[in-house]
Image (cartoon, rainbow, N blue to C red; front, side, top):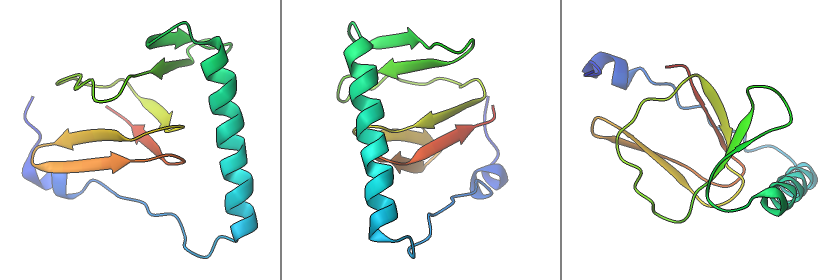
Length: 105
């Protein structure tokens, strides 16, 4: 499937507000670290892991696995550690710790 150039240019990039207080950001980062520790304690290695909610899963990837081309099911991903890199056409999107990506395709 080829994504038309017009669609690629219309992909929204939503930035978080810069006015969030240092206290709020610290609280959010603390929650991210706690969730990361909890999930990693349950992981038996890289790959997909079933969550406690039907249809929910989480994935452990090792650095730079270059998974290759693929299409996503609708999903919401929270980046707890490291960086997720997606490429659509010539555009490269990076999502780091504490960020999220929503895919609808």
